[in-house]
Image 1: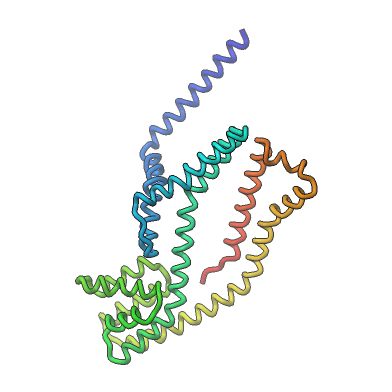
Image 2: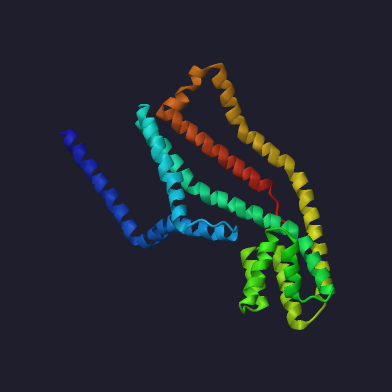
Length: 296
């Protein structure tokens, strides 16, 4: 009789929880669908936009296959592999984790490439503005001076300035072309450069002297950033050492006593503990890197 009552109570609990989940899902259905779209088609669209900024051409269908292969494909492969080895539950857990990582990894990689490109662009600003200033002093117009930068400077700054010239050739006002540059490459140096050019083109003024002033400001900022990077290098090194220490200690323990470390990779409890250990370790590294990273 008690077992029957317990079964009824369990079913009642399941019904209540299911009703609550359904009510919440129905109430926030629009937000849920938007989130799902952002995590699927939104991720692909985001990556396509960033690849276009990086001047990397990949067909949309091929990118879809890459995302599916790096997530679902890798997860399914690990699941089947662990299942063949006799650990289906571990295969489900490990396959799910790798599928999630595989789906998020392309976005992280693309963001890293975009940040690297912007950093390279910023390092080329001093030479480009100096060349632009010399061209204007020599009597060239702004489009002609930009063309000189496109011919003389390497990528990515030559590619970005070439886009300005191409947009201007098809009839877009030069001021709008510069504004589009700040949208593609959102840096403080770009904002200062574009604002100066647009204001002086409307009100009149000496562009060459303005560019020289901007060059001095950028040089001072680069010098200050290099000094900050030197001061924070020790903190970053300490963060990397602290992050790598658990793995080094685990390897030492495994070499000294493999039997004591084997359950960590062969049991569900050990795998869960390992997962949370890696998760907290990555969170600690992320916090340390955020602390030592200073923006100017």
